[in-house]
Length: 178
Image 1 (cartoon, helix red, strand yellow):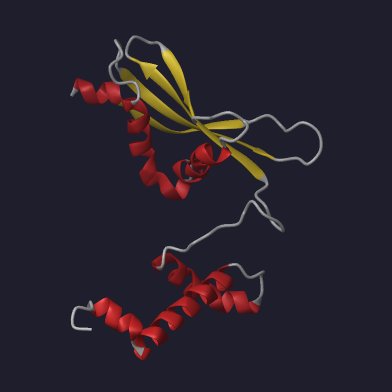
Image 2: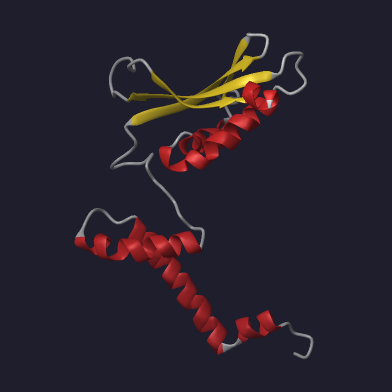
């Protein structure tokens, strides 16, 4: 026991066992509390449960599952304008339909934040990152326009047309002129 680390000693002690069990129970209660259906119990648990989930990095959203899945399809693209006047469109990377869903799904999750009004601090770094993908071209990037696409989903028949909205423009030509 002389060479045993402090953490190992704590884990082996009764107090350590109790602390670990209490921690696990608190996280589980927080997870349940953040996913309860609308009720007075949820209203009373939600603020504390949400804070515990944030502190323990166990936040989850289940919006793609019943009973209340998202009713809107989201997309994002960027229109890139070069100093010579040519344009190009950047879209999310996509892979083959079969077997690549897990590899490319992270991009679909990423756009939920990159396009959200509440995450406006991501807009400039996102536009700059997209511009950096075109470094080394004969004509430098002059402007990057981030564009949201969305439509309300319908169950039967064709989906409605996308609605688009340019929500952020980065003007690099102005920066290089300074």
